[in-house]
Length: 237
Image (spheres, helix red, strand yellow):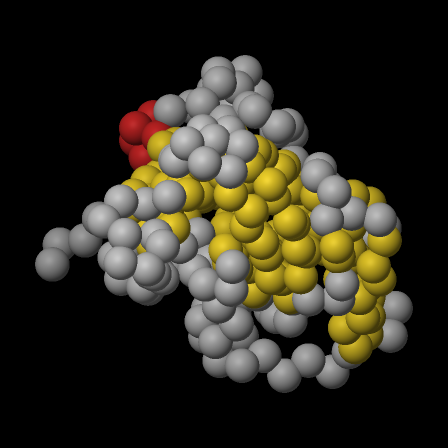
C-alpha cells in the first residue's frame, strides 16, 4: 500500500539561504519546484524513498524546528489492517543536509525489505525551478563506495552534490539500495549526508547521526524566536 505524498503542506526546513523543500512524505519529485537549495542553486531535484518498490504511506509529517523535520510512514502487507513496517525520516539542515532513515519491524516475525533512495540533480537556478531548467552545462555522476557525487560543469563554473550513506548499500548513478533483514521488533537505521560543494569546498551539515531532537548550541533560536526575528512587510492596504 503506497501513500499520496503530495496531499497536505510541503515540508520545509532551512538554515539561512540553505533550504530543503519536499512534499509531506519527505520526497522530492523532478517535475516539481521542490528540492535542496544552496547558494541559489538546486543541488537535489529528486529524492525519493521506496520500500519494496512502493512509497510508504505517510502517517505524520511535521516541522519540529525551522531547521528540522520528521516524517513517519508505514508499510502494509496486502489485506493487512495494521502496518508491518514503520519508516521514520529525520531531516536536519545546517550547511548541508543530514537525514536519518529509521526502519522498525512492527511484527514478531523476521522480515526482509529492499529500501531504495532515488536521487538526481538538475543544478537549476533557484529562479528557474518553477519551469524545467534548461542548463547549458553538463551533469555527470561519479559512484564511489557508499557515496555518489553529482557534478555540474559549465566552462570554469563547477558545482557538486555529494551523497554519503552510513550503511552498506549498492550505489549506482540514480539510487542507493539497501537490503535490510530485520528480526522481530528490530530497528535498523542509516544516516545520509547530502553535501553541497562550492568552489571545491565541501559544506557539510553540522549535524551527525542521532542528533535529531537534541539541543544544538550552534542553532540556538527556536522556531517561534526565528519567526519573531524574521522581517515583516507592513502596508496600509
